[in-house]
Length: 265
Image 1 (cartoon, rainbow, N blue to C red):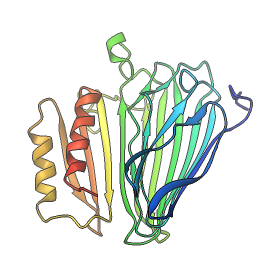
Image 2: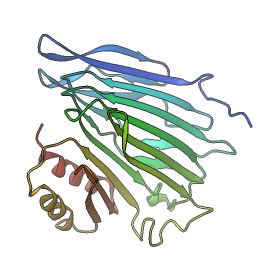
Image 3: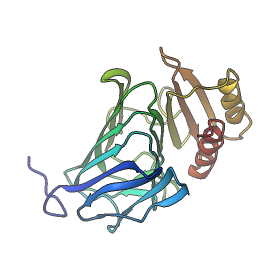
């Protein structure tokens, strides 16, 4: 079955950064509707914050998106979004996104969009592939997914939300997460899923020379916060995976920011 795209063709966003005269700059920006990019905010000469904008009300049935982000050697970039991402009700089809990210040598990417809200009867498929050039390429990847518009009684009423994420270093797979949330297959509130909570934060930290106490500090931040439950795990190469369940987006955002501050880039 073919899907109707609200914009008539695939929506595209391409950005890349380079180091020029000891500053991080965007040397390539290309986007089609509904995407837009704000002028970067400079945190320091070598560190910029890039805000992604969307001129639509959210993701609609049939929308397809391709995003390509290239973080050049010796540059530092934080990618954020303007607002929560809303995935709207769909009659029979779905929407999809493919995101490819590369991080160069001695480069740093903090991928930090605002939370996603899948409305009742929505269907969304996402594929994100990240490749780090080598051990000097640093990554902090944050995502927060909600149960839907809980204040309107729409808890886990979306049809499905599928998210495939893989992270490679020097083209070698170091992490893969294939998440399938489907109201027809699972009881989303049960053990092994959201376990009575309504929001989940996923955080991936790669190639940081962490203090020995980092894991304990991160766990303490989670444990000291009311109404959340989470864990901190290490991969084979000592990179970090953090998952946190909660009841509000803002609380999870705050916890992820507190943990990020421990890393200070």
